Image (cartoon, rainbow, N blue to C red; front, side, top):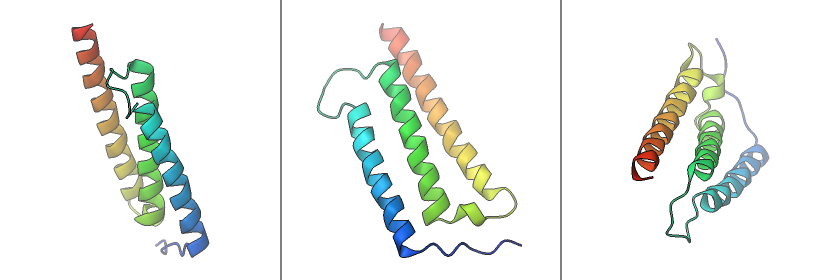
Length: 98
């Protein structure tokens, strides 16, 4: 049986700072100040950054890094599946509207 990680406040602050940097990355990739379509490349970048942020939150703040029975991998797989589905739907709409 795994024990819970005891992350130091310093580690959690560093992870939080990384998350804030990645939030700026999602704002850039999502072109929040531009009303035009993202395009496939920027949407792909947005999905990757979002997936990385979700993984950090799951591992450090929900401590799924220490979870047993595949819970951590299960949640990461679920988040990845959702991001892939969103990307495929976006790609379908982008191709349909051409």
